[in-house]
Image 1 (cartoon, rainbow, N blue to C red):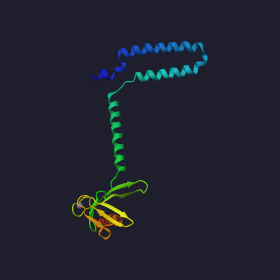
Image 2 (spheres, rainbow, N blue to C red):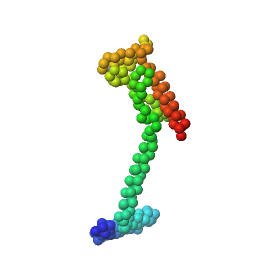
Image 3 (cartoon, rainbow, N blue to C red):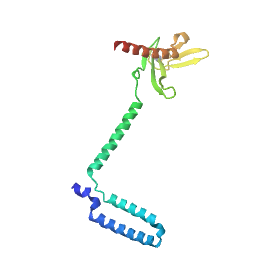
Image 4 (cartoon, rainbow, N blue to C red):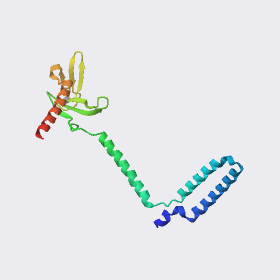
Amino acid sequence: MTNSKEHWTKSAWTISIGTAIFSLLLTMVYDYSKEKPILTTVWIMLKWLANLVWTIFNFDLKVWWIIVAVILFLLIIVLIDKFKKVETFKPDFYNYREGKFKRWKWTWSWNWSNSKNAWLISNMKAHCPNCDTPMIGLSTMYGLSFDCPRCDFRANDDQCDEQHKIERIILDNIDRQRAENKNTI
Ligand SMILES: [Zn+2]
């Protein structure tokens, strides 16, 4: 079964048509070149090219070559995928995204910054102590305030957690956790 597929290039049709076209071209090119000897170099190159094409057409195509090619192709895809995963490597603190600090619960996410070459805290939200809804924070020249859009809980100035301090505590918590892990090893 596979024999016929494997040797399709050697089928009677391919060979006869191939030979016919090839000899026709050969004759045409030869006649032309005889008239113009200046084309000798071109003629040699053409002969070389024709030989190459002929060799390729008569190549004994093996099925296992195709299988190996496909496997290699898949392997390259897997390697590229793996490389991508290394690129988006997540640090140990990546899942540390919420915590209860001075007064309220805070949530945040981690974003990689190419310019700073570091993971940065982003999207920080203070949650309402009554209904857990993320509050709307306002920092103006008159002071700091947090509003709950759901239950209208409101906090001003001294009653508020300050975002920059919470951020500092989060980073410090990570440092302390790391120091603790080092000591236990
Ligand atoms: Zn609320």
